[in-house]
Structure formats: structure tokens, C-alpha cells
Length: 400
Image (cartoon, rainbow, N blue to C red):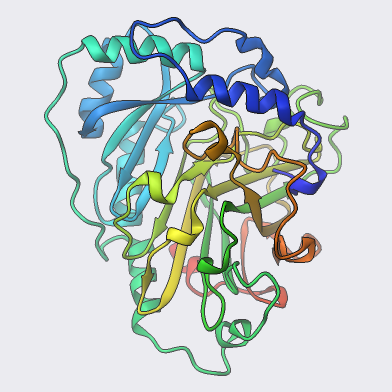
């Protein structure tokens, strides 16, 4: 997603759609109307909407439930201790592949809490159908373990003291955007037909997510660039533009990516406190720029380990047509407009208020951690503010 100060969407129109979602009727009620009004906010005339399940279930039970519904859904929402995200199975990325990758990343199995429908209208139908289906047994997933690579990475950072001369220690003394991580690693990795974009973010010293102003969330965005794509702004770009990058945002299920997840070490907070979401909304972004972002609606509620806050993200997407492309990355503060509509944080209502000024000043609203002139995907980079895009990312590169 573009920096919010440059955003061109009509705020009132988007918030009207979000308000419709917030007051969506219970099962059996009248379906939301005027769905076509969402076209300004989406590339496919649909806003993916989560249908909560009565209780958490295994992914096997969620798949079985999904197969009984008359309304097709795009994927599954998982939430458990320290982990939140979604998976969108397709012929390119199966449920079995996802379960294997989840175990490799987190050392546990996914706990499914909802189905992801393609639109509010579809969600209304699916919600009614789910209420009439006999439910599987409740399920609680085992805690993440160090058998998972991302969990082991977080544990290692908590166990090791940081030398005063390290990039992490130097970053701790910087004051710009003190709400943002001072040290970030980015890795673009190839896994068969999948592109993996992973980040490791940590705060130290005087930097802390607790310094984020009240009512503001944050997004962790890695953007790819292909300047040969004709057109000005999405979604009115040349056909096939979503595939003309190293990591694509299109597949056979039209869900854009295969899966995304966020891991907050030691966190056992529920979703309504952290509010993690995938940044679906790329309307008005340049045709030449492909954003891959994950947001946190309530960064002040992130957990710490030994006083150190750590957040890791991982996105799996189909491989695009390019073997590599330039890339940049930044952390961005976005106003939580979702709270005004009583909605949980999502791409469709975060950061849409153009009249909201960042309380700490516009120069502190974003922090670059990978410069387009140095960053490239696939590849690995580490950045300790104020020096974006240093060579190498010693931990995430090892994930390959």
C-alpha cells in the first residue's frame, strides 16, 4: 500500500462500505446492499470478509465444513498463541503444503477460527449456512515451539545480550519514529513455485511500540518494482500486471497470495487486541509498484520478552514472471479508522482518514528499512536505523 499521505481513495465511500460490514446482520438477516460501491477500494469488486466459527477447529475440520457449504470461500483464518494469519489454498499451494510450512515456521499446527469469504454478501450467506451445520469438536493448538525456525529465531534474540557496538544497539539510540522497530531483516526466498517474503523486526533501548500514539496502527510493507508495466494506477493497468513481479499477487483462486502470518514472541493475546491483517487494498497504487504488507491494528498491545519486542512476518505468494526485481521496505503508522465503525482492523478501514495528522509529526510517520536503490528480491538485507539496506540478513537468510 502507498504511503497514506499520498492515498487517492475517497475516504467517505470506503468508510461507508466498512460501516456496512460492521452492521452486517446475523444469520438469516437481510444481506448487505450496494456491494458494487466497493469497486473504488478493490481490484476485484470484492472485499474478502471473515466468517467467524463458533469455536476454533483443526484445519482438517475447517476444510470438511467448507466443503458442505453452498457458498464458496477463499480460505481460512488462524489465530493462536502469538500467531495470526490466513491461508488461501489453491492448486498451486495445497492445504498439505501449508500445514507442512506452518510446522516448519512455528513448530505447531494451525488453529482455525474463521472462513474467509470473497465479499460481504458471500459472508452473509456463509454465516447463515455455518449456523445450520453441526460443528466439529473445539480444538486448541499446542503452543509454538523452537522446532519452528521463526520461533527459534525469536528465542535466540531473547537469550543473547546485544553488544553495544552491534547495529541493534546503534539503532536503539536513534529517535526518529521511535514507535518503529530499529532493526529489521528482510529475506526473499524461493521455495519451489512459491516466493517467500519474511521480515524480522525488533525494538530495543528507547524504541518501543508502546510509543505509538493512541488510536494508530502500523504496517510492515515490502514493495516490489517493475517500471516496464504500462499504466498509471491500479486497478486500471495492463492485463496480467499482478504477475509481472518476482512475487505475484494472483493465482488460480484469485486470492492474490498463498498465505500470510505474523508471530509476536511470547504473545498469547487474542486477535481483537493485536488486530493483525493482510493489506488487500492496493487501489490507486502505481501499476509499477507491488505492495506486500501486513498490518497490526493495536501495536501498543504487542508482547515483549525480557523487555525486547519482536515481530516476525512471513508471506507466501506464487512466483511471478520476473527472476528478480528491485524492492523497498518501510514501517508506517496508520490511523485506525476501523474503531469508528466498530470493526476489527483490516485493510479496508485502516489509514483512510486523510484529515488525520500524525501526532508526532509527518516526518515520524514512517521509517524506511530497505532502500529501492539497494534492495532486491530474492535476496536478504538487514537494516539498523538510520542506515537502511545494509548487506546481509544473518538470521533470515539461514531459513533457506
